[in-house]
Length: 341
Length: 175
Length: 100
Image 1: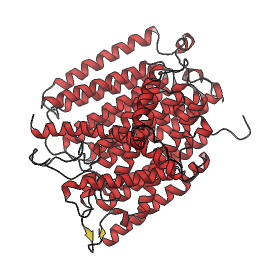
Image 2 (image 1 turned 180 degrees about the vertical axis):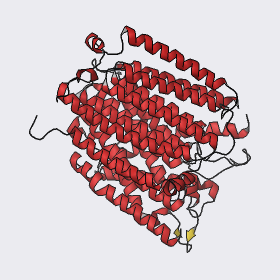
Image 3 (image 1 turned 90 degrees about the horizontal axis):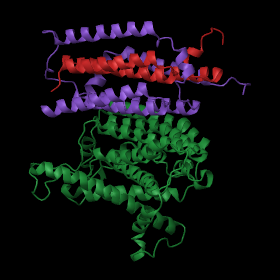
Image 4 (image 1 turned 135 degrees about the horizontal axis):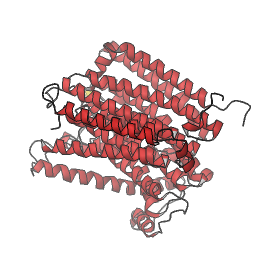
């Protein structure tokens, strides 16, 4: 049991704990930001300025009765939220969030702030995201109700369609970085051009960044692509029949998927933990700031833009986003060949 | 290392048990889900064989795309639980003669496999050093030595897409 | 450290299970699933031999096998859907006449 092994285990538990916290924080942030955008106050009664509101929500959800419709398939009904939540957590396992540290000299020989350093990390994120579709499909099917089934089929068709553009945006970054490992990609984004513009890939790949963010929003079923969950159209889509902790698991899975997409976008396009002024070992602060900026952008979009209708959503994904992603890949390939990057 | 052998047995057991349950289950949705579990175990075996690219591609393509297609078709057709008495009567192979012949063939196969694998000599033995794990080496080989096959598979996928759409389409004018 | 023999035995067992599924099950979709099991067993053999010979060719052939399996699953399922629309049954023994 070397110090490094203990530090790894503690790091894994810490990441898990922080992801759970991030879901709770996102609940509060979403409601407060929505309130500000709608010129009202939002939660303000529970704790100072409503900060304890997520705690109240979680306690309420835990005390609710866990219902299951009589005609539902019991095994699949129980399995679906487990798959959704597991895939949401697992995708974050390969995302690095800080430079190698020695934890104030406790751990000799740097501890990388990443749960698992795989040299095909981007593909692992993609793979786990495509497994997340099963949680939704099984939730809709096993509920044995028409709203759930419609919502889940629409949602899974949407997720599968936007996975293509997601993958092509990833491939464009791959061309620039020449490596599939997220740590390598972040380390190539250190430094700056002419001491003023940081070497982030968003400046080399603006279209790729837009494609990735759009596909990411569609993958996580967030507005304006949240037709399958829309309250006005489908009661609540695939999680209509779920209550109490199983509903909380779907809820949590959605927020953690958002956090993962933001974290991967930060690593791929916004330079990860590199930033001015702070030393490398405190880079995780920059990482947190960038991820928070993207999450704020997510929430802002939800309460500003109207929702796409389902056929508009699918036609956008196949007829607009996919050609743009392919052309972006071709132009990137031509650029890499010409400029010899 | 003992841990690798242990992982091999664990993944192998999961793959075999899941595959057996796939062909034994009556409910087709459970069959599809068990096959996904089997693919996950196979992906673990590929990682043990130091082929991480194939492992991840297995999850993305097989477990994440092909099985979703199967699941959608099972849901679309609302595939009923089968193997009623009527279906078993129609079965051409579950009769006395074919069953005995099949059992004899299976015994012959197992004996032959055991003999072949316990002989000395041949390719068996521990893996030599030097595995190709980097994706760039695979990509390089794919686009130079196997470039023709790569292009042909892209046409194959196009043909399959068009074929699937045409075959599954309702004739215009009918219900 | 498992050696090549053990991977080959595992692959042979999986292939046998897949073949048994093709012969014994009377549901077209389960037959297609058994074919996928067989293809995966073959993939495992290719990767194991590729590792034993120290070359990337095993993994590349697996790449092609997966592509072809995807195409074949898509077309096979489209055919199953067409057949189901005609006779409302997934049992291959029901389709005994050459007439549509």
